[in-house]
Length: 123
Image (cartoon, rainbow, N blue to C red; front, side):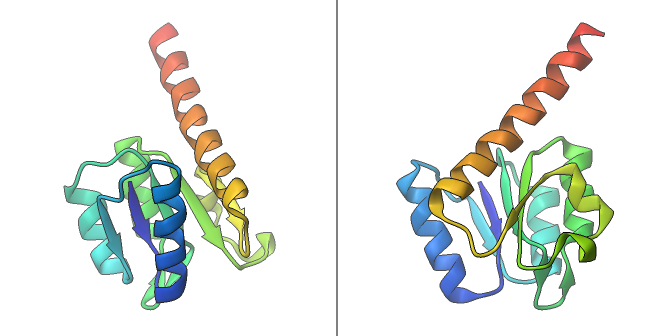
């Protein structure tokens, strides 16, 4: 699992919640450049991304995840009107959220990728 979040307290809380779900966080990033480097070069099953990091939008990372067929959840405080269209390729989770909402968003994201892979195999 990979997490990109620029607010230290939120990152800590998120890592605690993920650990409670039995997830292992392989890496974290607080800047887009670092998130892009990790997403491009490391192996992980799913990503939880803040929509806007301290140095800009997470869009370039989303593009890498889509190309690598890695499911992702965008956790954002922005309204749906202000979100880039690329965010629609993952599951969007509105901040603030509960742990149960996060877990559900992760499961939906993973299931969506599994359905996509199954339809590709069937074709």
